[in-house]
Length: 262
Image (cartoon, rainbow, N blue to C red; front, side):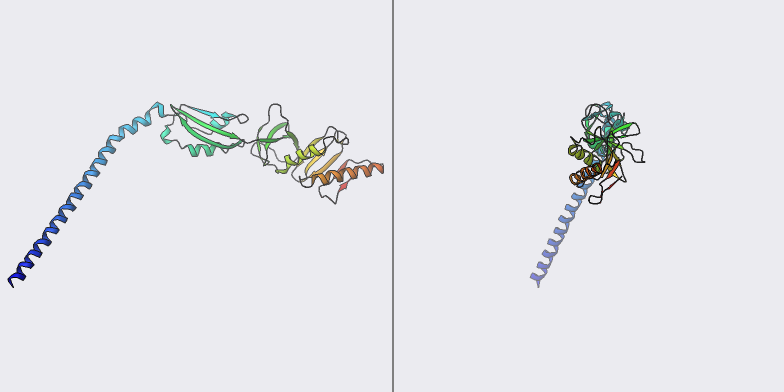
């Protein structure tokens, strides 16, 4: 009996020691957590003047905006979209600014980064012109998707079309993508065409592309589909009409096997 009582006593003492050690460990952990929080708070307080100094530093403020990669787009149009002059670089979001720049019709892609001290750099990739559209005394470049981009200027070997639709075109307007493609293909197919001298290319949304000669003959080709076939159809109609000594002013071959002329 005495032995059993001694064993119980030793077991109780061992359990109390474990509880005391566990409690001591937990208290040390709690103290360390408290000290860590105090240290972080002190660092945050000490960092406030540094943040304020960085915010107010002239080296971290946008002093000027440099636009790179532009030849056709007016850089002033881009900088007007970026009201960041004298703003702290800490609060400027380059991705958001790049998205604004890409709203300019002549811009295909854009990136924005900082160049210290105090310069915001906008790098632009312009849309490549595929042709020129003329409308109401104005000329604009058009890209391969039919998007009207920027006013056309300088000497250019690009194909030109005259817009004869009712819409007022401006940068950001969009033509059918086939408008420029059809005119370019026709210019190749009709390169040495004697019956269409001094020709021009007209485009209207409801009828597509037409070729108008200096002699007054107008040939409506429509879209860029089956242009080689349409050219042969136009030539056959014109040849037949001349054999019959008929004067032709209009030939419409938009519908391929069902042409019209008068």
